[in-house]
Length: 238
Image (cartoon, rainbow, N blue to C red):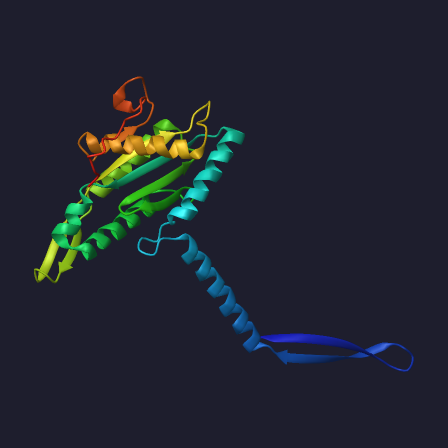
């Protein structure tokens, strides 16, 4: 039982307090209602900033975090890196095994991502099969290591999906392509440009074999994305 107490001093004729009146109120119902309201508000907040399928941050919240990370870098110059990645041939997975199998793959990817990053990092679903991670206090070398570790972890995953269409278990393996872009001095003009460069690096990975990591601006070669890649209109990501 939840209780509230009210203590009232009782004075005698001489003005001295030698007794008190203690009033006890049962506030269990009110306390439970308040707890339920706090829980509902917490769930509402969580649902407003997370992706319902994967449990990672949704695009709106993640992009707000990206803007904050960019502004923080402008102030303190601490290294911060953006990873963009998506699942290779995801359309083929959906077409071959069905969209429910594709959802299972997306969930598994999110589980692996959560295990591979720190509490200070920010992972989100950018859209469809494309994901993003903000690595705080991470320079170029350490970020590339994290990207490769994540890529290898995904590569070893085995998703077993009970497909009612074939009446049995099907084994699905999948890989990811990654683009990496570390903020540097002088900083890029805005966080949208930072995002674009990471996306260009991702596109380069997909156009050059998939299941690989490309780091933007490592040196003066196209291989490491120091030049802008113009995407042909006729080409589409899978």
